[in-house]
Every structure is written in C-alpha cells, then in structure tokens.
Length: 143
Image 1 (cartoon, rainbow, N blue to C red):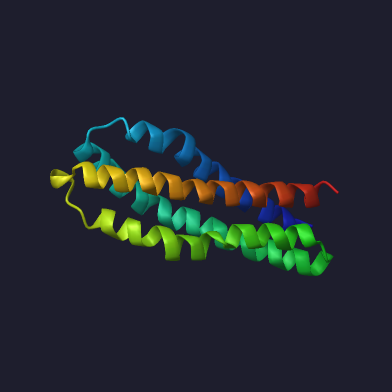
Image 2 (tube, helix red, strand yellow):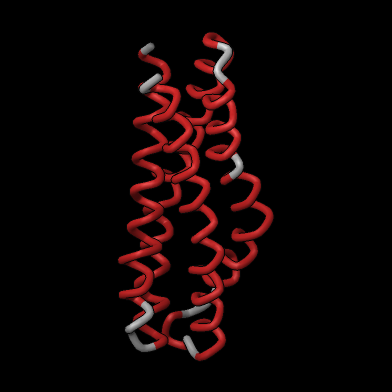
C-alpha cells in the first residue's frame, strides 16, 4: 500500500536526519569554542525545525491512516512513536531551545555550552523515537 510506504519513507528520513544530528553534527560542533558553538547551533536549529517537524507529521499521519485501513498495530505503534516527537519537543526540548535562541553568541559561555550538552541528550530521545518508528513501519511493510 502506497500510504504505508509514505509512512516508512517519512520516518526513515526523520530518523536519518535525527541520527545524523545525534551521531555526527552535534558531537562535532561540541568541539568548537563556546561562541562558535552557539553561533553554529542557532541557524542549524532554524533550518532543521521545519524539515523534522514536517516529516514527523507526514509519517505519523500516513502511518495512522495505513494502520487504520490495514488493521496493523505496528503501523499505529510506529505512528505513535513518530508523533510523540511533537509533545516531547514542545514540552521538554522547546524551553531549552528558546533559551539558546535568545542568547547572543558573542556572549556564549559555560552556561550555553552546558545547555547545548543537555540539548544533545534530549535530542537523543528524538533519534530513538524515529528509529523505533522505522523498525515498526518496516516490519509491517515486509509482512
């Protein structure tokens, strides 16, 4: 079914982007000094936000619809995992994002670095949720 393929593709793109940030981009930027660290994170976050949020919604809705049509619990569970990124981000990560976005990179210090380390740990949850969605969608797709 094409809609389950849309769910799988969206979840895979979401998880791939999240894992790239978790495993490559964020650890690399943590090697920078405080000011360039914050200066790099701010535009990166602005660019990633619409991509990641759209992929989570498209994949989650497509998975729910496909799960409803096929009565496959794996599609519903994968959708819940993928869509869980929204409330997790809004309730847990967004307060950190807001503070980091409000900081002037020219005045970055150990506080902003600690917040970016915390942000990275929180972002790991998004990567795990995305990977869970991919595994569930893929299991359903290959059945």
